[in-house]
Length: 342
Image 1 (tube, rainbow, N blue to C red):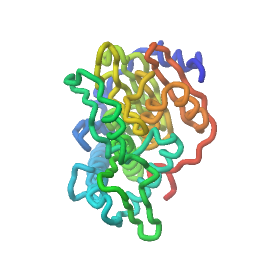
Image 2 (spheres, one colour):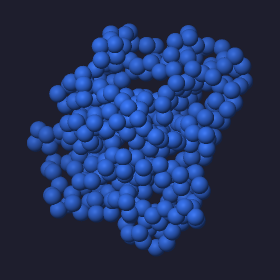
Image 3 (cartoon, one colour):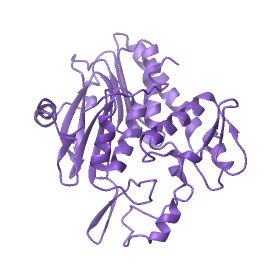
């Protein structure tokens, strides 16, 4: 763990706030669309010398994200994910290899983070609410019971049949902490296959960008002040990578003067504490998505220790005491369908 390096601190705290992506809407050859996908706000941008290609690329990205939503949504009763959940405690479900590999990678992240990330978190009994109605902390018994079906180790994957089995009735899986990052990866891949050398997919804060803005600068990404989300405290630039932020400044509960974050530790059922926001800088949006939640759950010391073991991944934390802390990085062997040769 270390303070932010001086060079990065200068970028974060002293650069001018960059224009929003909307500022480029009149640029010839740029297609930008904002719409609701996967229940979230998506912003998709393609820049090329051929305006028709930019339009086609954004259309293709949208279609890909919609396809992924049909595959992984636990709200869509016809999705393969819903079939897995309906058959919990009953029988294995054969799935597409794409979904099988996503679950497989999610389990790898669970092992890497000691269970701070866990797609079986969808089994959680919602004893916490963050709509302002909660006036007292749930009982220890209620909290303990809320996580009784959670456990990534329980998920059974059969490589030969490409089947997934949740052995306990009441178990569920969900991709809320990795799905948007995966969709952003896939949309980016499809756009690049069409020849788009400059673009952005922003999945409600899970952002991946490549190439440059129309003015030739790397894409600029602003980070909200946890104390005032309308105010930007940091501007990062990326030319080929992902930036994902997870924070508690939009949803939390105040009970007897104590702030409880909406991000729950799946291992304990208690809200994570100690941090206000986590920003992950990573070559891969899927992994960045999963790590942002994981580090928030792990907290400053363990979260930084995790990121310090990983190659080409940076982590920027804002603590409850408003300190700004950054990680170092080393090795990681991790591939996803977004950036691998598979």
